Image (tube, rainbow, N blue to C red; front, side):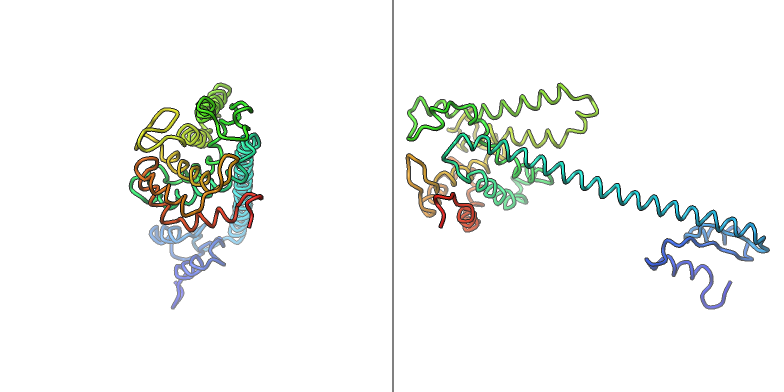
Length: 321
């Protein structure tokens, strides 16, 4: 009942300032109406003592609320530590996952002495395409939220199936014969089958709780499966291994298909010279609606300079500036 600024106004001022927001406030007042007490608690008071007061009781209540405040502070500090620890461990797990994916991709790349920095470049190309198309009505659902990151992260696994191709074919220093090419064409299915087996074996060994918690990991592997099995499919249905066409080809595989072809065109191979950016661009454009999803080609054309910069930055050692 103070003049000018009463106790309620003081409490409101304390609560509005971050420096004093968490200080526990006890009302000591001659006002004893229920509505007055309710108003004090509604504003954030921790206790409400009516006069006349008994000093020992007031001191006891003060001690109680100081102990509660210290307990809340300890709990808040522990919660902050737990949040930081959870964030640290999640970051660590993501790093381990990224390193595992990169190790698997490098395993496949190590058996193919022509690929150089292929997986680095193609992953960057896929990232460009995915971000360019993320808000497109035809692609939004496939690239919404964490799915975009999964597509980019899974891109290096597109050729993991090459570990199952015989050395005589994979390492042949020249163009493949038709029969050898038929064998090479099995690598998408080999990679997809390996990923499927990995998921099946993990589920078989997991209890119900672990299986329920593995949703994101399996979602990622499903995207990797899509990319492995579908990155050689063509928009018109003339690709392999299953001859999918149009919208039946997963979006992730459509992005990978263009990234993979562009990189193959501009890089030297034992059986061909590196193609100029202009000629490679022309071939990609000619494949619009035949080899590639038309909108993916349009996204490539709109970001072609960025593709060129990625190719320059991550050029193979023998192709350096």
